[in-house]
Image 1 (cartoon, rainbow, N blue to C red):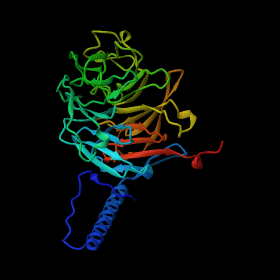
Image 2 (cartoon, rainbow, N blue to C red; image 1 turned 180 degrees about the vertical axis):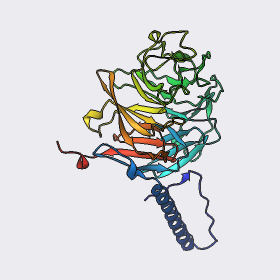
Image 3 (cartoon, helix red, strand yellow; image 1 turned 90 degrees about the horizontal axis):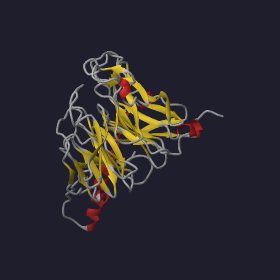
Image 4 (tube, rainbow, N blue to C red; image 1 turned 90 degrees about the vertical axis):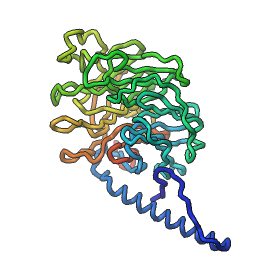
Length: 396
């Protein structure tokens, strides 16, 4: 078990005056005590996470990557391997560091705190971009300054300050633009300037609306083949346990409308707004997901560790329902594609929900350079690492 500095705040040590040997022996003693304490604390934290309850396909294994990442939401990887993690309720941004590359974090550092729902993080050109409700911040040259983070610069403050669906997942597209969603400020309403995905240049200029009719997306990625934007969308509430579905949508170009608030799923007219426009007027979902599963972060699998059948497919973190009679979600799902179409939707990792109670809630996924899949859990304040080994896989 390796020691970690939780929250990254430096530890100050005071030693009594004495000879050089006394100082050295004292430093060694203190270092040993700190390491023992850190390892004990880490072991205690890990023991509270029942990962033996997580069911995965044969050959896959899940382990703790980091603990103490408060309210972990979206993840982004820096050029030097730092995993940056946003949060929603905690208001913090963390940097998770695995210095020796053994697949287990050495440090969890606190980069920023007291922000307004800084869910979204993205990395480009040595800088970390962080999305608050109404603005985008940028921390320059951040990986060389993790212990003394720079003051952020405001890239854009042009977004609404409504907190209802105001938290944002952000990412840079293949076009070099930063994509930023603006969720609906309601359960269901028709409000100008909301329910859309925007994009802008890294300096905040060229701000434009890319897509409309999207109630709330908190996860998107671009297909590795066609470079098309795919995104999850959370369906409205108060239509019953089983309707409407959450959605996986595809936007091959700008200017498309995906139906909210008039239409939900492929063909479900809204009780209030459905009389105004028909579902046939809008882009249908690429795949209907489970009802109220709260589909959040999604990524295409671009690694090579997993078997060929998983490459180019979509992993989705389902945060889990909050008001369904029988809870659903709390898992990582796999959507398989064929010919560019989403042809199946099946569980990949599940077990965070036990007997109607959740001990964890997946919030994002991230593919690592070695092909492992990271899973953020904002309920357990943890990040997991899913790997594959042929040693435990079925024989062909």
